[in-house]
Image 1 (cartoon, rainbow, N blue to C red):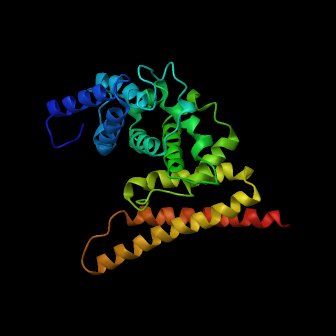
Image 2: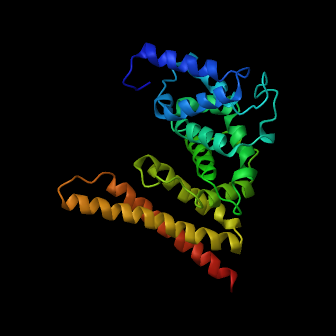
Image 3: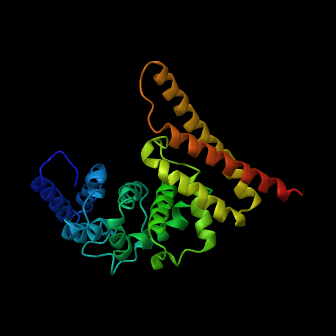
Length: 266
């Protein structure tokens, strides 16, 4: 793990997290441990699959166990899809999202049912009636896993309609820091995936997608203008080419969606 503290302190921190996430602990303690893990998500995401495999083996199921509301129950004997909690689930997804960037975490995310849990959240959080940030993280997690593996059997249960529900909902309410460089790679993947599954979109779907794309582009362009202003003041611009590439790709997606929408009227 990459952190300023010593390796011994890192391991102790993880061990305490695991202990506090135990299914026999009070819910408020388990939720507090989940929030603590979310705060340290980038450090946890950098755990080495070889050097810290034992830590990953213990931490992965412990994280998911927090989503089991019954004391003494585990993901293996509790139906995770029956229980949803808006804040807890957003915290959980915000933690798993950076873990999915590290391919070393993928066997644990698949084997310990994190992927199953994300799939189970699709009907709850990926609908156009009440868009939430959950959808963006669900999309990011699933797309990052598929981008690293040619065959992911744990994703087989996802129907084409569900993929489209995830893609269109992801644009409805992206994270506030969407213009942060840590989201650039997944945004490009999201554009491609949206194009792929947009072929089954309804007229109303496209009518909702287009303004959401416009808003995302506006946010990215505003940030680009701010960086250029800072550059004029002598500060160095960072990730400008990536941002420009995303803006171009999103505009192309917007054009494709607009053309498809127009075809409904013909």
